[in-house]
Image 1 (cartoon, helix red, strand yellow):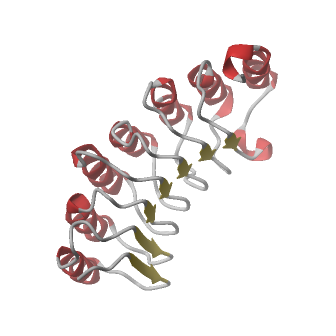
Image 2 (cartoon, rainbow, N blue to C red):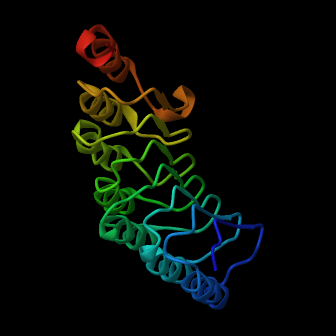
Length: 208
């Protein structure tokens, strides 16, 4: 079965349905799938963990969209393990907006993302349990020599000055990122955080 694109939208995916999706993925050729999308489906941690485990044979996957679900810490651990196990990852776009990701979940996820040297886009918007502690885990990824990230979306995450400073530190010397998007009204940044970004912009090694 040479399926290239799978999309589930506005389904209610319970544990049994997640199991059935995982079984279907097992039937896909291991070199065929390019995009997997499961959006607005209310999938629980157990169902998503089973799907993530099945995707381990699909390292050529380029797009993974799992927005507007109930993926939390356990789901992020499962996804982080998946990303780590891919021997040669082609993943370019990862969409995880509007889930229940917290700081520990993000840390587990970032550990897996370090193995994805082709990853260009990450959406984490509206995961409102993420704080500065979680954002700090992104900084080493941005500093990595293999980092290819171009777009990071963090709208409606309150990471405050500590998070802003961590992001600015991570971006110092980074050559890949083109857009870091967040909402000033909900990020909780004061003059201290903005000063960190201002210093970054004045450092020509970070923008040339």
